[in-house]
Image 1 (cartoon, rainbow over the protein chains, first blue to last red):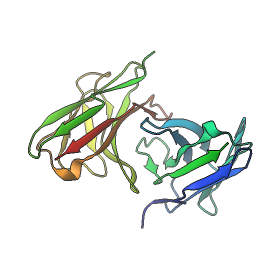
Image 2: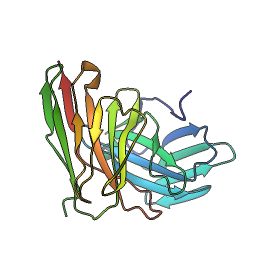
Image 3: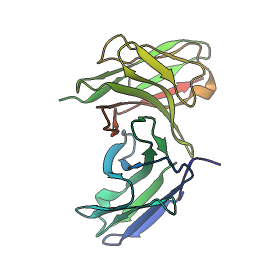
Length: 111
Length: 113
């Protein structure tokens, strides 16, 4: 079993819809949780960065971490065609820069 | 500010050939790493370095070699290319010191025939 499992998708939603992306993990030592966005033929770019449990909001993006359930989520409100990309969850232990990544979920937002 | 720069962007090799993928960062980051990305597998760590002169193996190190002679550069060497090394390779760096955010380069698409 992989250390990080991510809903495989792909997801196709109409413009303006809420996009919900999820990952589960098995290592209880993970404390830092990240979401990366990757456009086609580009490198991943950091979208959200959270520490331990709780919610973090940045514009249309909300990241949630539930450490008791070992479950993290990313919500995209009022989705736009420019949000069409692959979203990768990632996580690591404190002071350990070796991130464990999910396989990614490809999202298409239809105009 | 260029960030993390990778060269080349595309490369085709024949089985058994060797080559070096270049990576340079201008952010004075201590931590650098190499990942490969394959369909359905996500990003897998090949090698990493926590500072000049220090390197260590990641999840999938076989067939690859690295060195870190300066803070800025972290080249990845393929010793004898195999078709299983066909992948997209990403270099990444992080400030270190408790800041685990990774900044990625734009990738190298490698095909081994």
